[in-house]
Length: 135
Image (cartoon, rainbow, N blue to C red; front, side, top):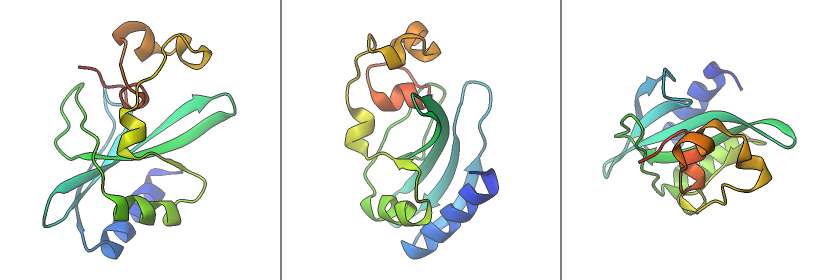
């Protein structure tokens, strides 16, 4: 997926879920993910998008977080309607729920043994390792 496709999906998902895109934040040093922030009456949610390598090659990963993301800290949230619409708009991409992203991981598993974040910062959940965040 290209950045244009990600942004287009965020705009369409916002329209379908009665939200409004307020900004996009690109990846940079220390951030391996892009965000598209969508505001609703009850919160502003950030659609987070990154790419990771697994046994089958590169795959694209999306989740939903609280829009207040600081260096090294990310809080995943539930926004089921938004996640469902993104699933329709971006078939074939891996969308994770809050429960999946907050699930503990086994850093000794073969997949994570050579992962830079796992080796140096020892994250305690799937979301923290996929989106390079640690406490």
